[in-house]
Amino acid sequence: TVYYKVTNPNYSDEATGSAVVNITQRAIVFNVASGTKVSGTPDPIIGYTMEGTLVAPTDFGVVNVSRVAGEAAGTYAVTVSYTTNPNYQVTVNQGVLTITAAPTPPITPPTTPPVTPPATPPTAPTTIITPTPTPEAPAPAEEPTVIEEAEVPLAAAEPTAYWALINLLLAVLTAVISIGLLAGYFTGRKDENQRLKRKGTMRLISILPAVGAIVLFILTENMQNPMRMVDNWTIWMAVIAALQVGVAALARKKQEEDDAESFRR
Image (tube, rainbow, N blue to C red; front, top):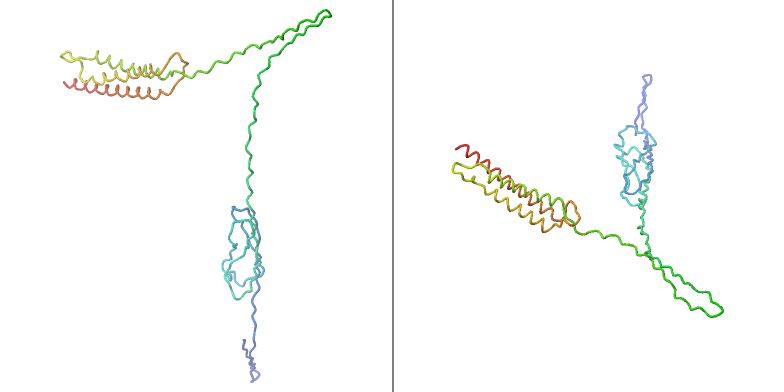
């Protein structure tokens, strides 16, 4: 209701009254766009347009586009959400998001290898010599002559036994280390009483790996067979050689300790 009052200084009377003013809502229309996607992929960005003008830009707050949840193939309604305002009559024309099914990857049928028929051995040709009959007396029929095909020599069978070159080298290395340690033991420096150096036990122990490597090589390798680099016994030969290297290192350490002790004396 609007109240009014009319006055004029030239008149003593005043006119007053009231009137009813109807304020209608302003019409706003949201038109939401549509989109498509393949199932399992991210949703496309879907926008909207608005018909009509707002009194203030913030009359609807923040307008968001959302859709009905789901990822199965089909259609889903897309709409807008906003802060309601009693001063506006809002119409929303919803959009549609169409989800199509993901393509099924092609199935490659298994490849069947061609079947090679077994080779048929050649048949030896047979020559039959038939004599020409004479009027006097029929000639006796001769037996057919069979020409046999020459035998084809078979390829030599691949050998199944070998001896390993690495095993031989490891056995020789183990023996050489032992010989060197023993030579140093018997030809080394002697003390004032002409006795062999003390603590030579490790040098004597080196005999055991050397003998073990040689015996293992003799028992497992036959040098009349074809040669290859390694075999199933190579790992054991390597272990024995590594043990021999360790014995040599300990013997060397003992010798350095003896030399230091002799020097102090």
